[in-house]
Length: 474
Ligand code: UD1
Ligand code: CA
Image (cartoon, rainbow, N blue to C red; front, top):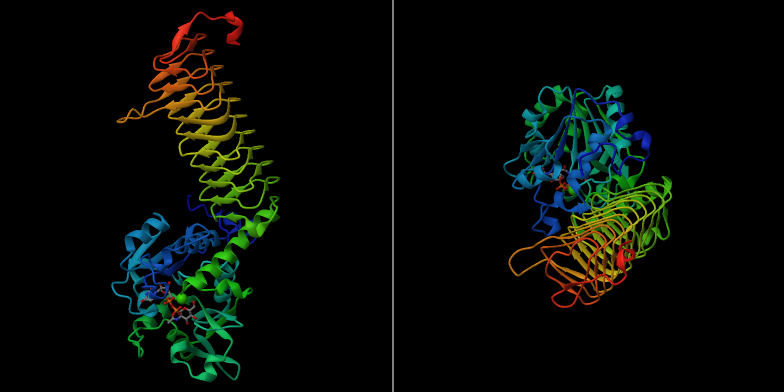
């Protein structure tokens, strides 16, 4: 998927999508993604773990785009190449050589942030942050007169977060959990991990941070510094789930649930029927037009697009599919292919990548199609393999017919002309061409091209005088 700003599951309403966003000119947004993520116990860097099918760090940069932040810097460490691939070309990568803490990471973005007058900083393990929160906190910051704003939340279980410490009701600083005494740990107000700052104050303040007991420089020490230097503005998040971070796989599952819930809700609000939402798995990159019904057990994956008036499932798996209006897909697996309108598939079919099914094609049950084009109104009813084939319009493929596309060394293509009739159990040994209106008898093993209108039968198939005459060629 392109980083289409209008396409963010974290935009609560369409009005918040990119078109409506006033760009945050003069801002740089810095995403901290260079930590080791050891608590995940994973060979994959934490920020590359997918949430609803999209790497966490990419969800964060997508939301920044959608909120109107055009100048985005991702701070990466060892995994810089993988992270650069995940976020796409329009994002700058700054390198933190060693993970010496969030304060050290933010400073690594100094050069890439350029002359921006304001800087938004956020942790990359916050995939649920919404467009609204990013925009509102930044706007409030501009009006606050403070040198630093940061996101807070009240959590029923604040375990794992830095706690906000207040004195006489005013923010005094943030204490990290490992440094907090029992009383402070009992505080329900936490640091969300999103900050907005005046650049002229920020960069010197970051450079002045000193390592704590753990040897890390805490970005959160900036809050205490800002209290002394000119004021800090706490901005309380509207929905606490937005600050759900991902340090562990348990938290990853929690975020995944919340994100999928958000995606399903947005689709239902836009006019899609989900018969059993909890049993329907839809990735963040999926688009579905109104008046389509999705039955339980479906997995809609990757960059799948579905038109209107379709009936999908139960138990369909669609990966990177483009599906036109009024299609009906029974429990089948379809990948990397395009279906025009009115196509019916399954149950129990497998459409593999690189296939195009034109309008009103019918695949019955147990059909496999790979890298093939199938013309309008063609029917492949039962137990067939169509691979590397170009099939014309209005063709009938009988039960058990297959294209033998592989000779043990190379794949070859099969061409079937408009209106051809492929008898049950025919084997079309590629490369081979069946002319328009030609027929193959049941069990024919076709090793040579068949002229238009001809009838072939046998093994190897031979041409027979057309018994029914031209009428058979309709
Ligand atoms: C951090 C905050 C904590 C806050 C919580 C909210 C600090 C010191 N603590 O804790 O107050 O409540 O987030 O989610 O900031 N990273 C780097 N380089 C590093 C270390 C971390 O780039 O050297 C990145 C990580 O990849 C991650 C982000 O910074 O995306 C935050 O790091 P993490 O280890 O998750 O911080 P927490 O301990 O959760
Ligand atoms: Ca974290």
